[in-house]
Image (cartoon, rainbow, N blue to C red; front, side, top):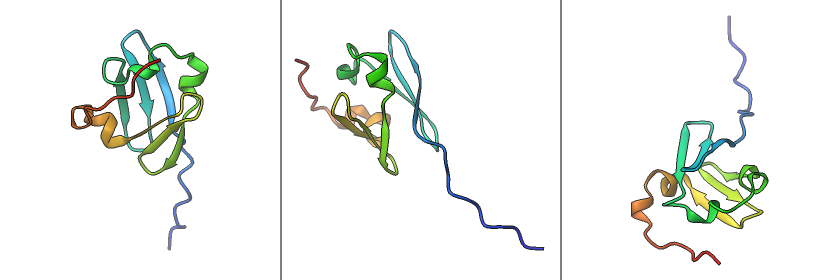
Length: 88
């Protein structure tokens, strides 16, 4: 007996929590934490704009309301990417 082929992964990227410390992002492979210290452009945004996230390609996330795009590597290792956009 042969099993049917697996279907397309339908799990979309999702913001699961926003706290005073940062944002938790659930992807199809893991949960990522973005502290406001490392990702300050999220700190003063509305919840609506933070949860509006799209996965542009595997491991590449975009927030259209904030015009921020980040990769999984940037989120997991912010120390490797010391340049930050200025908050206006």
